[in-house]
Image 1 (tube, rainbow, N blue to C red):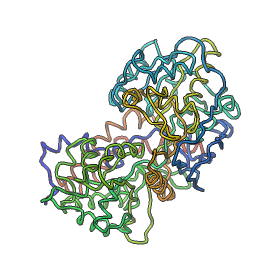
Image 2 (spheres, helix red, strand yellow):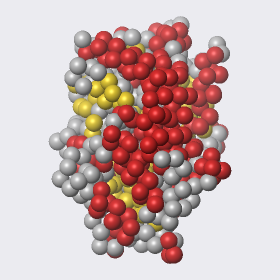
Image 3 (cartoon, one colour):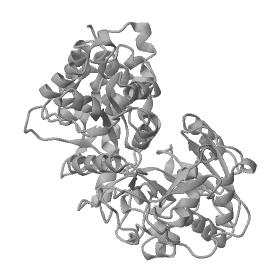
Image 4 (cartoon, rainbow, N blue to C red):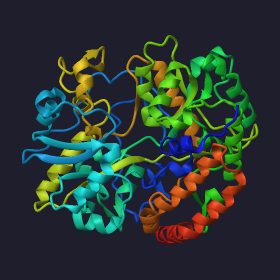
Length: 546
């Protein structure tokens, strides 16, 4: 089966396909390798600037790792849950917040008992405005251009003139959160240090993060399908990975290994992690210029030519590819780690359904494995400039309540609402009712939330599988050296220049252009913006690292 695709069909694939390689990913979420500090970036975060890290030890997990980046695993909700805040955090005017969502719109406040429960616990009305994630950039731009900012605004990714925008529109939170000052807000102090790096510009703290697991993207694997076929859940080489894909494919029976060309996997297989790398001297390299990147493109073409990718896979949206994997039409799907729990809901009625994560194998058995770093945050929430310092403290107390840890009564209220109406207890575990499922789409978690944990009610195997994937994968993670660094050229000009490079990448992978065209496309990108971005990253890195 040929991997080529018509020009008309190709034009419809670009939006669906662009995120499968590194070029489809956006930077702007600084990270480090350890919740205790030790960062490689941070937008000018000097010694003593970041909040003191003080984790909770109240809720010991069932699964814990010696690697602090691995999320703890819980088989049941801690029993009894513990209240970790005192009093009511707010008593003043309603707090307006602007954020986004990936879910359906929740019922309005008058018909949403979960939202009402949160407001009752906060002592004020949380006036939540939100848009679909795909529309948020436009809403954000309109909001910033106006003079009526909500109290809280989600800052998603780096924006043009970011340091100047933050200074002009938002509150400098350094005196409230830097060092031991954050201990006035214990739940915020329990957020991992890497997540705070995204909030730092020009040596000041400008918001509160929404933390995420560092595992990043996952090659989701229908373990039950592989086990029935007698296949290993972790191939040792590209050759074994390819043979596995062929064994899982039978187009006459409507079965394929992949719902999309797994370019991100092939890049890691060829030693490419992240879009940029840096050496000890601070010299940056655009990884698309490396031989391994071009080899990954050639491997992608070869995989397509074997017919192991669904023939419509590169022309549909991710929701369709998710459905294929759950139905068993495909065995693999690439997606963000945060989406893992939804697959258990979708596969609940499938006998034996089991989902694991596969690591990108080394090219040769026994070779070095690498993994692209996942961001330590989704985004951060900034506080609009306020006339009264006490109003800032009140908003921070609300954020502290929203960040209450797993195991607390506050967490139950935030995620599940009102007992008997929006949730019930199954043993120690809170479980949403049908009404609760609809109301829980309220995107409070996109204002801020607790440090990530692994918990799947009544599904111990699912908890173990996620924990094992993090334990196995995070040891190979290569930190992204550009995260925590600011390049105005990357923000203002990088996206448009990258579109042309991405288009070439797609045409090569889909068999419409030869792999040999890649070098010239990369050279054109570097001449247009890449060399300037490289210089700005090197300058920022030097300032940060002395």
